[in-house]
Image 1 (cartoon, helix red, strand yellow):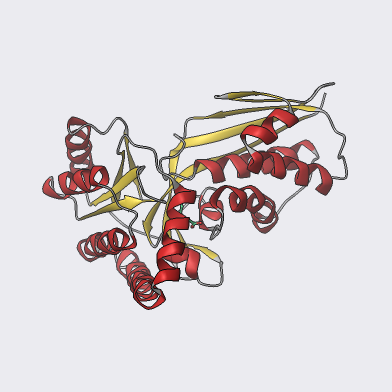
Image 2: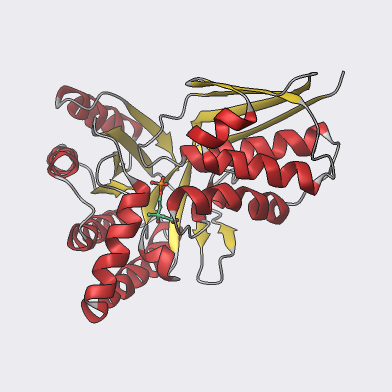
Length: 306
Ligand code: PMV
């Protein structure tokens, strides 16, 4: 019996979502407690099973065309277009929350097939194939999520689409909280594109400011200057609101995090719902903020050491 296994984790954008689609840098942290695991096993009939889907390739194409395209491409890549298999995926990354669940699915699947075919891959190869479904899901994807869900540490995703793991010695903790509403990444990316097309000067300028914030943020986090890094996160949030991707639900939680001592807070990921991320410099403070966010109605929240 042949068997393959692959996994990937969730991520949270600390700075630079959306502007990253326009070539500016972003800083993205892994959320290692949330992960997606994929297993491929020999079978005489193809069956794909996830937490909310069970069916054939044909049915998959109807419901999740990004994953369907990814599997088709993978089978062609391994020159086994007629392979039949059972693919089982288990994930505790909530979907539509700006936490990279679609990228984690794609990376876990690619790695599982590489393992199944005993193929030794580079991150670049996994990235290239996984981007097939990400581009289909987001309309236009920067690729930042795909690298972040593979990286063991926070990444600086630069304008050349290269991901560098930041070697940090920092006291930083983040609290990520679900706002209780679904994030709509593809709509958010489209909304920003429409706004940019209508007023390229103003929106282009917002992207540029966000890019400068991410560049500055890299220096601050390397220097462990968390007050300044937090201030940059909140500044980034104000620009995301100007792009049109924030919501009253997100803003309410951001305010609660700041009122409870967060050094900075913002939405994270595509927005229009989804999650927020708040920064602190102690685990105890992170726990206080988490309690305050939960009391305010956040259905789920997670603390992660940076
Ligand atoms: O909502 P998520 O977790 O898929 O993050 C999207 C991040 C964007 O910058 C808005 C899009 C992208 O491709 O980078």
